[in-house]
Length: 539
Image 1 (cartoon, rainbow, N blue to C red):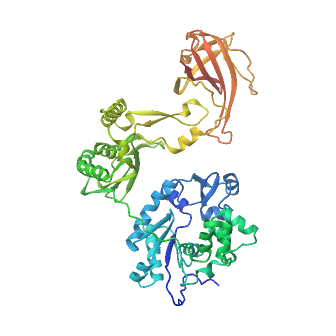
Image 2: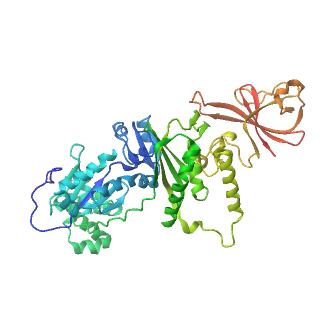
Image 3: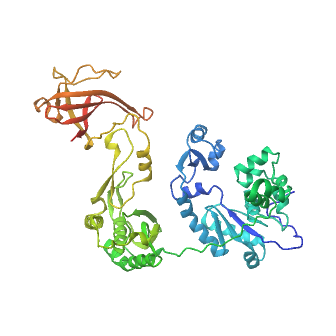
């Protein structure tokens, strides 16, 4: 029988190469919550390739499990919050955990974000026992507020299975030396995480790792090849995988403290000039440039605010100072619509500059024959933005939607297009206007008049049938009957636009029309309620 979690037993004679594995359950979900891509509590799941890759305990209580399709998962749990899987996010959020582990147990080998192996020999000698070393790893995870499980065994594979066999009450399992094979024997062959081999073994009547381990090595080599030999060694508890400690990345963050705190933007910007230059110089010395920067501000009340800034090329010292200054300035409206967001409400005592994304400096060198047109455009726009503010220079991008003004997205120069907007733009939108698209799209629909031959507003019945053909068009609806009219020479439509019927606030029930007036201008019109509106003009 396998040993009980956390209860060591005397080891038989002989020595083996031992390994300790730290496992952080549902790490993709934990990383998404740390990055605030998912709510901190409640049912939530991370989706990869249309299936659930990780889910919260609240979601599991509602019947959501890994591998379930997203539609089925949302059917079982209607309040399920989801976000797409992001390996970069998982690795980025795992970095502070690794740093905390390395402070207590040097020699960490990252198997993947959320799973790492640690050299146990030195840690056990330092802490006095393998159990104490496992406790130190759990303390490191507790200090960061994340859940961890630890397994110690004769091999990395056995230690992984031991960590996954722990419970909430006993968070670590230490397998005595020379017992890993017996511990692994009852596990199904799927534990090898080789679906092809597991399927073949089951067809041959081999369902557990113990059955597989009892096969002669020569037969395994001749039938399954080198991959089968490696899997056979894992099943015997003799996984040859060595723990290769990673080289800790160079610390590139820059922290600036103010004592006493500063409450004026110009003072903070002046004090940051030298540290910003040192921050960029350290990156360049490491052969890197920063293309995405996180700025964290802490005031004297302990409130911390963070923002991630992008850059169309890479940050220089002046760009870093500008981003801090913009983050400190009050904004008329933030993306959530809150007026007066941002600004200094208390003295700032700490500014942290954290490179969110870096790139090799070799791909960002100056052209051999001087700066090109693109570089001059970048410098000009950056200079305007520095003088007039972040929102003074906007770059258009395509978003998702059926109504044209919803598809236009303006983002400040240097900021990346929001991930959700890019995903929405790539999705199909049945009922949207086909190409060619209008050249002029109004920021908000403009009221117009569309009249029939009798001078009455053109109407459409509830079934979408045109009651009278259009004869006259007036782009100035505010002028009323005295406004100059244009004859409608060509027209087509109507096309029904029905969306979000289930949402009381965002539902839309409208009809679309295309016309060409007597001046040769083509218009895209929208009938909503009793009024005609111009969405766009074909120039």
